[in-house]
Length: 211
Image (tube, rainbow, N blue to C red):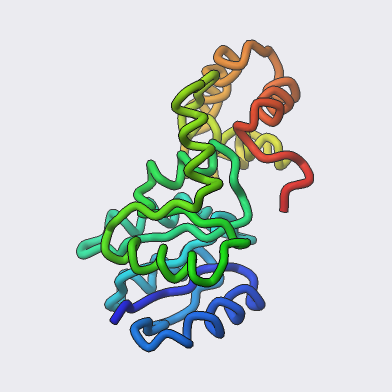
């Protein structure tokens, strides 16, 4: 029996996943989480084998940060990311944070179930589209930002100030400035606006129309 937590800030998505997965008698949905903090708390207090994790929540830690904290827990459950976001940076950050797999929300039900079984056993589970992106990235790495540099740029793209970014990421403002300076150098730019534009053009962060 796979004991599972659904972590997504959209109730309708959680309801859809629950309806789909309850058809399988070997999956037990222990609880649902609408925020990263809730997912972390559930994994700390409950016996959980796997978390289906979205990447972005309306408030609190991102799915990547929640994954990192969950994987640091004693007897940590595995994490399977299930999301709409498929930029190279999103994929790499999730895997670096400890996710066992990465699946897009348009995956077929059979693909989702297979990924759940694999991820719960700690086996890598990537959708074909994600696997292709990773292979392309390995063949032509281009500009590579660290996960922290990428997260800072995404926050800049969202309109946050250095102070707000520092508070959100639990960093000092000086550290945020260092990450930005390093990103500027790698991207060959001198301003926040240019850095965001370059990162979007290279597929490092999502576009303004991503949801």
